[in-house]
Length: 163
Ligand SMILES: [Fe+2]
Image 1 (tube, rainbow, N blue to C red):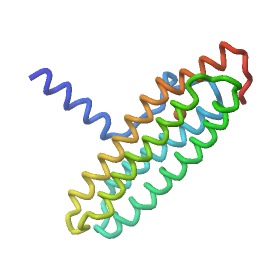
Image 2 (image 1 turned 30 degrees about the horizontal axis):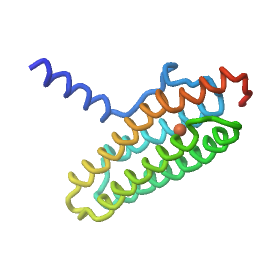
Image 3 (image 1 turned 135 degrees about the vertical axis):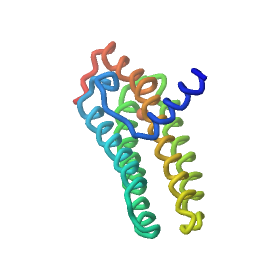
């Protein structure tokens, strides 16, 4: 029973969006600001999914927010890749870029599934959109804590200045 309770509570957390905490700070102001913006868009998506709207109204709103989230993620990755490839010899740069590209492959699969849903099946539409939100939520949290922290440490250790 305890195990079931624990897994339910993890799902509930991911479903309720994501909260910024100092634990997610990588110590580079511009990147932290962008991560905060990404988190706010993930939460905006969560709010849009749970809004009391007609099926078509919800589809329109959710589509706008997903596009905003995905477009901003692209902008953020371009910015971040410019930084990490800008160091003369950061050994993880190519791997890091590959992780970014993998996220979009996952997002594309979700977007295709979401677009092909019969909007009259609003519960399934909401379920798929929630899965996308949770995927972005969990991916971003893990990515910040592992790969982004890694280049932040490299920057610190090598005395590189990034605003
Ligand atoms: Fe990254």
